[in-house]
Length: 260
Image 1 (cartoon, helix red, strand yellow):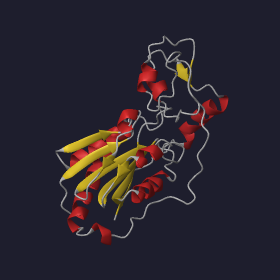
Image 2 (cartoon, helix red, strand yellow):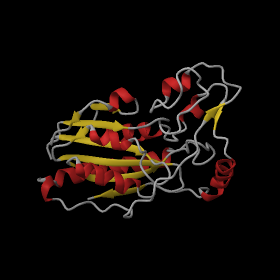
Image 3 (cartoon, helix red, strand yellow):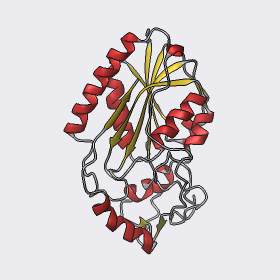
Image 4 (cartoon, helix red, strand yellow):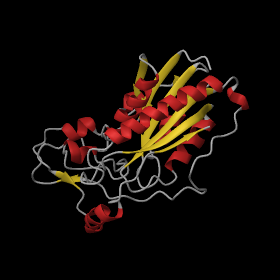
């Protein structure tokens, strides 16, 4: 394959997916174009990728699926037999159908997945789960993964002749879950950091303690960025699940890679 441009493309509210996708892209080339789709203004731009581009694209996993916001992202992307490396990051519990969902959505916009990986990152809502991951061991695996990608690319002469890469996942996809919504409490100092950094503009622009339940995607960004720990999810069922998660996701999961 004659690749002229490598792009690092990601949706990453808390930074873990960004770190992973950039790591892979920068191991494939010293000259990478970075496209951060976390902000609304960036997601709203129409982007067309060429057949001589290689797109390294990544999303976090929320409850076994891609973030629901991914639908609007795919609507603004278009490929032209463009090869891609598909990445999902998850908090050591399970990635469910998210990688298959990513691959099949890329197929629809004429972006061809030639390799893929599921990578573990520190859980965005329980930082004791997969703490400090990805770690050195993970990055060593990703280094080998990028070497394998380079070898595979040398063997591809016509991307249209490739069979579809086999990705784990099921049809129908795991159903989307209704998730609890973070809200602010009396510790809120109205600094506005949560509102400025919410990737879906779900936080009220006047009273930062309020969250629009219909817009929130449960990414945890507002919780993680709050300087006074004022924002949290109060539902008892959620708190109980977070406690169980340390046992459910206690055993170390490893990166899975898929190469055509």
